[in-house]
Amino acid sequence: TAFFQMTIIIYSVTFEDDEDSNLAAKAKVLFRGYCDELNDEHGCDLSFQSFQAELDSLPGKFAFSKKGGLWVAGYEDDGEDDEVVTVAPGGMLPGGKPVEASSIVGVVALKLIEGDSVGEVKRMFVNKEGRRKGIGEALMRVLLEYAKGKHYSEIKLDSLERLGAALALYEKFGFKRCEKYVECPEADHVCMSLKLAAEATG
Image (cartoon, rainbow, N blue to C red):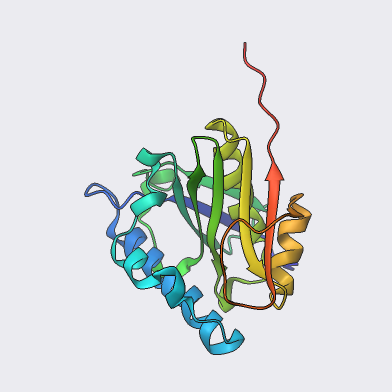
């Protein structure tokens, strides 16, 4: 828990030409940070997931045009009330302020994996500078709001038992253990699922 007031800023990242180049560049840095930390600190090699090909082809299946999504998060210590601001794809910060790449510390992505209503959370990662500030929660909240708006019925993810903080975050949002839906060579592989209630229309 942070002991100061701050604004968390969530940016939708499209990798399109009219978008601030800092967003795409930082998203790639955070993807690489996710991979490196899993390998260096937790002994998990992501080569079995063709990670480098995924990185080279971003946004790939995470493109908003494919009903996926990719978001990065930054923060400002502004001395005001805690707040989460979501910036639309290609949008600018309130007041037209430029994106400051140095303040971007977290990433998460979403892709369809079954039909047009079952998705998967991928690459949830907050670097060490950004931890214990509620940034992971803010990213997950934005992703789930987007998924509901796109009429997803279920969101899945996979993780590892050794990643206790990540599992605690997922459980906080209601994810529950489920049957394995994807292969992984790690012995402590965990799969989780969250059913999304259909939003009323009218």
